[in-house]
Amino acid sequence: MSHIPVLLKPAVDALNLSAGARVVDATYGRGGHSSLILEQIGEQGELLVMDQDPEAVLHAQQRFKDDSRVSVASANFAELARVIEQKQWSGSVDGLLLDIGVSSPQLDVASRGFSFIQDGDLDMRMDTKNGVTAAEWLRQVTENELMTVIKTYGEERYAKRIAKAIVLARASETISTTGRLAEIVKVAHPRWERHHHPATRTFQAIRIAVNGELDALRKVLDQAASVLKIGGRLSVISFHSLEDRIVKHHLRKPSANDDIPRHLPIQPKEIPHPWRVIGKLTKADESELRENPRSRSAVLRVAERVLMPGESDVEVADGRLS
Image (cartoon, rainbow, N blue to C red; front, side, top):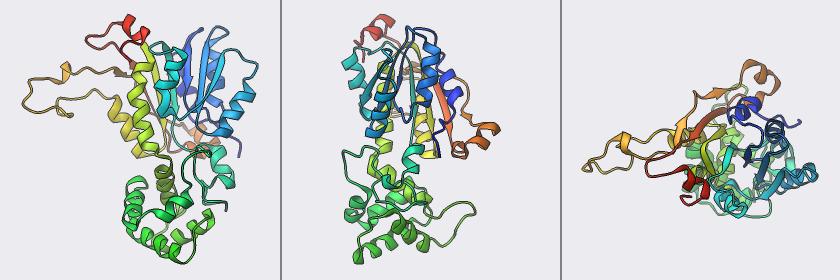
């Protein structure tokens, strides 16, 4: 299947870009969002694309080698602030786009190990040059840790039963392929849902654990405000409830109950917060759902960087508060 960017126009339009804008696409994938961004920023605009996947980085380098507006960084988006500081862009970015999760090219290539549909090596790393593979992770994880990962990251109600089956199976034979893991989960799962493979949630959970995806998401959200100028926009596309919960919590205005000791005389309106939420969450419309079934679970949230008490827009642009 060719790569179809999810929520393409809503996510890019929400950045509210104009000609000459400076933009970061921190999850390049195969460049669908980047292409539309370039159309909107014109000849004087600047675009930084980032990705931790070596194949995506190579794709970007080849695609934009003759476009002086585009620079490419090989990095996890958790390193956003470092990459932006190196470019001396801190506090001067007009738009930041994050498309969270696994991309279609990663899912569709069996050797990447993300899919339970095609048999391949059990890898699952988004950065194939670093970290342990899913097979290596499964060899060393304890049954209790595995159960917790499947239950928490996969929201799988039969996590205990599945974890036990995996640990039992690995005792006699190394689980090194996606087909083998999918079969173990399939046999262990007592209740299959219609149009839903029984291994879906387990594969999702292991992938998140292997790549440290939720920690990376928290880190990039913590860094996003220091990157954007006042009035700059953040668009975040997430694909399951765990991701969306993190994004929603980060962007909403904190209340006095959020990590604030009760005895302190502070009111919610007094708590500095760099974000103003723009509109309501957006989901794919019927037309996109017909064209791209993978967009069914996608959710877009948008926020604008605002001036906080004690800040000045000059200091933000100079990066002195980053």
